[in-house]
Picture (cartoon, rainbow, N blue to C red):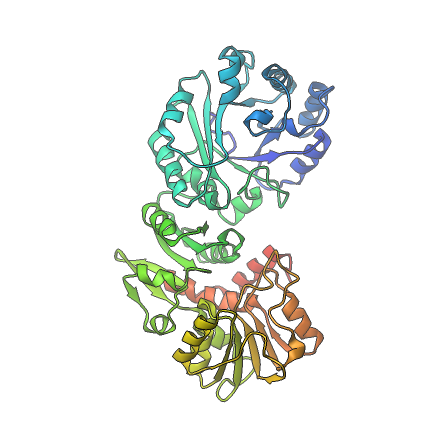
Length: 501
């Protein structure tokens, strides 16, 4: 896509009919985007050319890439390269300005296949749905072909796979043919968000919250409004959230809203990793200036830090890291947030608090309320971990299945039980307790079954959203030195959850 006015975001559309694709295209609002039509998803090709021409006319002939991938190359078309060529040729005659042909088809049918698709601009693509291998040889093979754009998409099994994409794009960003590169899957999301910054000719998105065509695709409007992918530049500072389920985190929505409100040139990324070492490699080479830490890395991250705030050190868990003068510094903002939200409902001094769990979030809660003079009761499935935490805060331990008639002032769920997609789960039956305040740190969904049960019993509840905003505001202030726009941060999360009020 050599034209300077070409879209930088193409929305991938897949549906069994062209009318369904058109309906999806119409729903994508905002600044004009391009469309990638996954024609291999269609069930009927009998009147493709005429129907597609009418569709493109109604859409005012947007920039469109026609793709028709064979099943042998990861697509849905069960046929030959001749069938594929006929479909793509019909799309070109109908008005599609570009076509995407996978390298497997070119190798099978020959370069002559590409000539038959002129005058459309041609993209030759390489996909690896298993891993991100070394890419230099693949790139050299693709750029020898008579095409305008080369596309490389690989499976991002690790965060460090994004770095391969980064190196490739930065090395060839000003060369011809143009290069598009990205890593698929949850761990590849940073490459989708940063590919334009790194030099990709364009990137791909899904339409609104429709199911993505490829794993890791993000809705076009989210890419534009939350991550501002088209506005990132060499001065943009990078931040992120580390976790084994970071792709589900709402911290990016919240922190990016705060950055924009305070006119900070920064972007906050989901960084999903299975191993801490993988994330640290990515963070250092990509140049992250700070990051939030979620499960299961709040304790293990301590070993990687150059300095730890005394409170975080006592707790033995860190959820906030900032890079200052080349050193990684760590804090725990969970503890202060726990005190903040609880003291709005009860006097902590002399109260009795039951904490469910013994991980990083539970440790922060236990140390925080104990410092305020509360009595702490720990209930966790991992008895050894619970005992270690109990020793640190002089807490009582109650076996997981022995909470009958336990009387406490508040219960805190510091486990992931009830988190999406396991929304029907609850950490404990409230009928077994005598309690006044129920606090669930889970915020996705906003109204967990645990909180709904509590409200049904007339108990005072504290949602994970309140906790998320409280600790996130303190993180923002550590990273930027600016006061956090709390109301706006909460509003951003509510909108993302579908609860704008």
